[in-house]
Amino acid sequence: MAAALDEVDLKLIAELKADGRASMRALAERVHISRAGCYTRVERLHRDGVITGYAAVTDPRRLGQGLAAFVYLKVTQNSWRTVSADLKHIPEIEHGGLVSGDNDLILFVRTRDADSLRDLVFERLQAMPDVLSTHTVLVFDEL
Image (cartoon, rainbow, N blue to C red; front, side, top):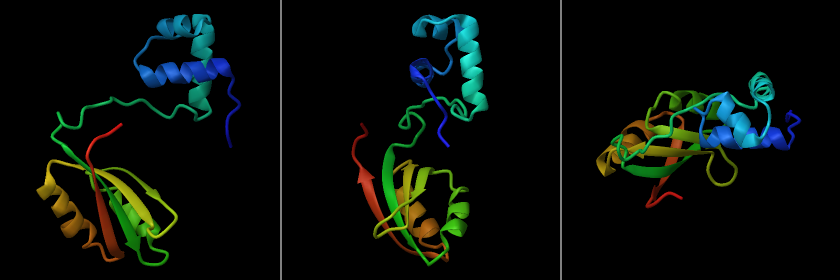
């Protein structure tokens, strides 16, 4: 169920998305509310599950993950839960989702290079017992 958010909550969320390390004082100044009000609102957003965590934004190339791709998977009937659980243990998978259409799952992956991507797709994903087929689309540039 969606939380009831007002304009100030949305501004706070936008500021925290832009800079998750901002102090309560800085946030309050940017959103034009008191520091106490800011603290109370951010705590409520955490408690209500609107804000679920904070993360460092990194440059994949500097981390040695210069190649990105979408990998579409077709899996056997009713096996998506099992396959999804197994996929959570593969570090190259940055994001995945159950999708509609011709495929069952879509994965956004990052690897070091083409050889690493080939290993991921052919040796690990296609070797999974419930994976029927894969389709890989390279990402040339990210928006």
